[in-house]
Image (cartoon, rainbow, N blue to C red; front, side, top):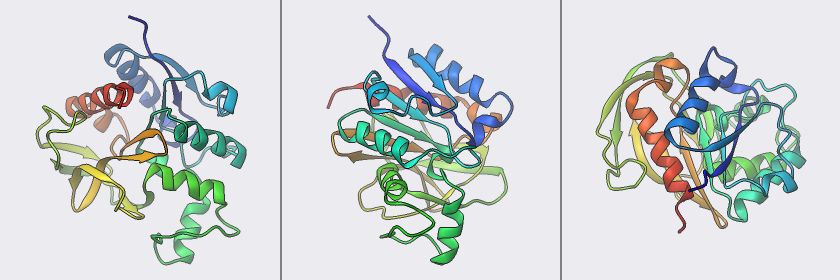
Length: 231
């Protein structure tokens, strides 16, 4: 059986930390069985190139230089809307430095953000697709992950576990989200829909402490299988 051809975006974000990219590549290729193309320059973010992929996995984000353009982000959201499944990991909810200034201007992340001189319509559309926007986190520390939907294919067979990681705080409208796991009142894993495309977000995975956890790896492998399963 042919392996699914998948795109792994690693421009900026936590892919810069030692061995993070290599460990995730190993999980996605060896455990999840993907035929993986890794892109750390956003070169694949065109309509023509994205059409070749059965799945997009995004571990890119804040501190990317240069940041993705509106045209590139528009190609990504359009591909997902047309039906390409999308998995966003950790810092993929913080794609632009201006997000932090935008949040400061509004005293938090608004449920109905509007474009301005800090964030464009294309950028806000991306965050709407992804389902949330990063608003902060305490220092890396151990915390308990609670599975809220143990019957979902992504979380099936995974019990509550302790992990040492960043506990992301997320803003945005949670109504469209089906939350699969949480910690400290924050959603950690959820699924949603963007047009015809399945969307999954996993807020874990700051560094090797999180990425190497067996439960994290199982959740990611099962997320790939869920994403590639036809509706």
